Amino acid sequence: MRIAVLTGGGDAAGLNAAIRSVGRHALRGGDEIVGVINGWAGLMGSGETRPLDEAAFLGALRQGGTLLGSSRTNPLRIEDGIAQVEAAMETQGIEALVAIGGDDTLSVAARLAEHGANVVGLPKTVDFDLAVTEYCIGFDSAVAIVTESLDRLHTTAASHHRVMVCEVMGRDTGWLAVMGGIAGGADLCLIPEFPLHLDEVVAQIARRDAEGKTSSIVVVAEGAEIGGLVAEADGPTDAFGHVNLARRALAERLADAIESATSHDTRATVLGHVQRGGSPVARDRIWPSRLGVAAVDAIRSGVSGVCAAVVGDQACLVPLADMVAEQKRVPESLYRVFTDLS
Ligand code: F6P
Image 1: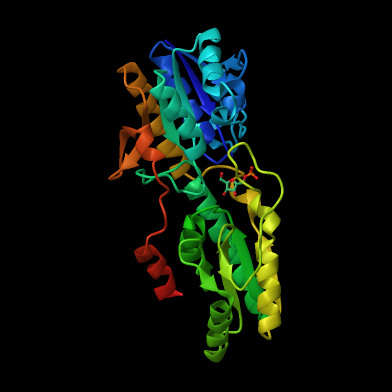
Image 2 (image 1 turned 30 degrees about the vertical axis):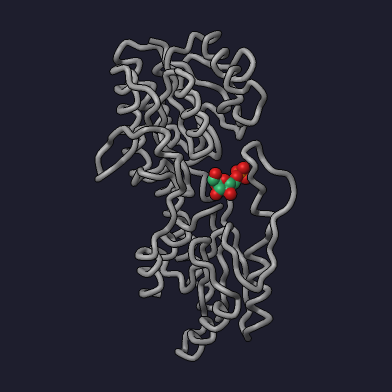
């Protein structure tokens, strides 16, 4: 069988481990494997793919990014987009497709499956907001970077008795902020799920001052709303309708507001795409390897419209539609772990 693999949306550490797993498992079972270039953009028009052989995967396990390239091209927003994908699959002789991505990419995969295409998904997002699965490619590596960054901010904050605001990714959900905040011992955590007012942020820093704590680390998700602080995103949207949240300058605005309301010198750090770059941690090599094998096995057994996922610490298959039905949000119990310990 001729199987294609595609990576869509933002890159993340561990994508190459997934591509390698899908590719090697396919090849070793006697299937043919091709890579789709630049996500769904590579299945527009007549399509753009390249054959993958054993040599293509050498060193891939530890490499960041995606060796196939990615894009935010959205066939659902292009007239005849799904028909174009189906036609390109036909032209390229693709009999089955493994689509690796977050909710945007997997929504396209789900629609294709509804149209009868042979498609299996793999979950990837540093935002960690896909429903059902306990694991998403790239999240653990990103948490490790947030953790190390907060560790580093602690020492400089303490030396200068400063408040350090650290903005992390998380468009609609605060998983990176809360997990990184727990691991890195942040003092305040601002996330979309549990909005705080600026007055409360200032009051918490004042409480810390009263306790003799002369520095504070504030971790903030890029998508957080902070009452009393104006931080609007504007500018162009991508093909999935998302504005570039970096334009909100949230960390800078928050740092300025904290500095004006307290006696603290305050600095802002935006981790940005550093969180998505570089080598994957071990979990972002092991799970992509396991899920890639599960995806190819699903294709071989004739299953389509599913996504390989981790549930109960086991690799399993769940309907693609369920993966994208809703966003997984930080539960109060997890947020409370942060607030109780900070
Ligand atoms: O797709 C997840 C994400 O990393 C978000 O957290 C972030 O807002 C966005 O991608 C950034 O996208 P881009 O790489 O297109 O600037």
